[in-house]
Image 1 (cartoon, one colour):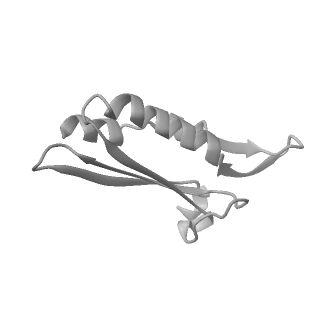
Image 2 (spheres, rainbow, N blue to C red; image 1 turned 60 degrees about the vertical axis):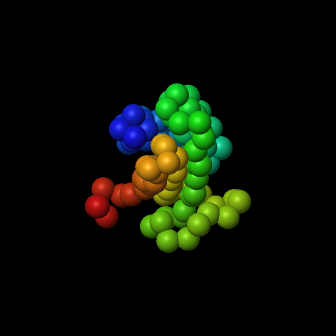
Amino acid sequence: MSQVNRVFMSTYKGMYEACAVTVGNDGEPIYPYFDKNILTNYVTNFIGENVRKFVPSYDLSIKFYTLGGTYECQENDLARTVKVSLKANINYLFTFNKEQTISIEERSAV
Protein backbone atom coordinates (compact mmCIF):
# COMPACT_ATOMS: atom_id res chain seq x y z
CA MET A 1 0.00 0.00 0.00
CA SER A 2 2.81 2.42 0.80
CA GLN A 3 4.30 2.06 -2.69
CA VAL A 4 0.99 2.93 -4.39
CA ASN A 5 0.51 5.86 -2.00
CA ARG A 6 4.04 7.10 -2.68
CA VAL A 7 3.50 6.98 -6.45
CA PHE A 8 0.14 8.72 -6.29
CA MET A 9 1.18 11.42 -3.86
CA SER A 10 4.44 12.08 -5.71
CA THR A 11 2.89 13.08 -9.03
CA TYR A 12 5.21 15.99 -9.22
CA LYS A 13 4.14 19.59 -9.59
CA GLY A 14 6.15 20.00 -12.79
CA MET A 15 3.92 17.53 -14.61
CA TYR A 16 0.89 19.74 -13.98
CA GLU A 17 2.83 22.92 -14.72
CA ALA A 18 3.89 21.47 -18.09
CA CYS A 19 0.20 21.11 -19.00
CA ALA A 20 -0.67 24.73 -18.23
CA VAL A 21 -1.25 26.95 -21.25
CA THR A 22 -0.16 30.50 -20.44
CA VAL A 23 0.20 32.13 -23.88
CA GLY A 24 -2.59 32.57 -26.41
CA ASN A 25 -2.41 31.91 -30.15
CA ASP A 26 -1.55 35.58 -30.66
CA GLY A 27 1.54 35.26 -28.45
CA GLU A 28 0.07 37.34 -25.64
CA PRO A 29 -0.20 36.17 -22.01
CA ILE A 30 -3.59 34.73 -21.04
CA TYR A 31 -5.19 33.52 -17.83
CA PRO A 32 -3.69 30.01 -17.64
CA TYR A 33 -5.63 26.80 -18.01
CA PHE A 34 -4.83 23.08 -18.23
CA ASP A 35 -4.60 21.42 -21.63
CA LYS A 36 -6.96 18.52 -20.91
CA ASN A 37 -5.52 16.13 -23.51
CA ILE A 38 -1.89 16.59 -22.52
CA LEU A 39 -2.63 16.39 -18.79
CA THR A 40 -4.72 13.24 -19.22
CA ASN A 41 -1.92 11.64 -21.22
CA TYR A 42 0.80 12.60 -18.70
CA VAL A 43 -1.13 11.43 -15.63
CA THR A 44 -2.36 8.21 -17.27
CA ASN A 45 1.15 7.27 -18.39
CA PHE A 46 2.79 8.19 -15.08
CA ILE A 47 0.29 6.25 -12.97
CA GLY A 48 0.26 3.32 -15.39
CA GLU A 49 4.04 2.96 -15.48
CA ASN A 50 4.45 3.23 -11.72
CA VAL A 51 1.34 1.73 -10.11
CA ARG A 52 1.11 -1.33 -12.35
CA LYS A 53 4.27 -2.66 -10.67
CA PHE A 54 2.44 -3.03 -7.37
CA VAL A 55 -1.19 -3.94 -8.15
CA PRO A 56 -2.80 -6.02 -10.89
CA SER A 57 -5.50 -3.43 -11.63
CA TYR A 58 -6.61 0.04 -10.61
CA ASP A 59 -9.21 2.68 -11.45
CA LEU A 60 -7.97 6.13 -12.40
CA SER A 61 -10.35 9.07 -12.76
CA ILE A 62 -9.40 12.50 -14.08
CA LYS A 63 -12.05 15.22 -13.96
CA PHE A 64 -11.66 18.81 -15.06
CA TYR A 65 -13.46 21.82 -13.60
CA THR A 66 -13.87 25.46 -14.53
CA LEU A 67 -12.47 28.37 -12.54
CA GLY A 68 -13.09 27.83 -8.85
CA GLY A 69 -13.58 24.09 -9.27
CA THR A 70 -17.35 24.41 -9.04
CA TYR A 71 -18.54 23.16 -12.41
CA GLU A 72 -17.26 20.16 -14.32
CA CYS A 73 -15.87 21.17 -17.70
CA GLN A 74 -17.83 20.61 -20.84
CA GLU A 75 -15.98 19.82 -24.07
CA ASN A 76 -14.97 23.40 -24.95
CA ASP A 77 -14.58 24.80 -21.42
CA LEU A 78 -11.17 25.85 -20.14
CA ALA A 79 -10.02 23.69 -17.23
CA ARG A 80 -8.53 25.52 -14.28
CA THR A 81 -8.93 22.72 -11.74
CA VAL A 82 -8.26 19.00 -12.09
CA LYS A 83 -9.25 16.23 -9.69
CA VAL A 84 -7.29 12.99 -9.99
CA SER A 85 -8.64 9.94 -8.16
CA LEU A 86 -7.01 6.54 -7.81
CA LYS A 87 -8.57 3.38 -6.44
CA ALA A 88 -6.70 0.08 -6.25
CA ASN A 89 -7.29 -3.20 -4.46
CA ILE A 90 -4.02 -3.96 -2.68
CA ASN A 91 -5.15 -7.35 -1.38
CA TYR A 92 -8.29 -8.82 0.13
CA LEU A 93 -7.89 -6.62 3.23
CA PHE A 94 -6.71 -3.26 1.89
CA THR A 95 -8.02 -0.86 -0.72
CA PHE A 96 -6.23 2.31 -1.74
CA ASN A 97 -8.61 5.19 -2.47
CA LYS A 98 -7.33 8.77 -2.64
CA GLU A 99 -7.75 11.90 -4.69
CA GLN A 100 -5.77 15.05 -5.37
CA THR A 101 -7.09 18.39 -6.53
CA ILE A 102 -4.79 20.78 -8.38
CA SER A 103 -5.94 24.31 -9.27
CA ILE A 104 -4.67 27.30 -11.15
CA GLU A 105 -5.49 30.35 -9.03
CA GLU A 106 -4.47 33.95 -8.86
CA ARG A 107 -1.91 34.61 -6.17
CA SER A 108 -4.14 37.31 -4.66
CA ALA A 109 -7.03 34.82 -4.45
CA VAL A 110 -5.04 32.28 -2.41
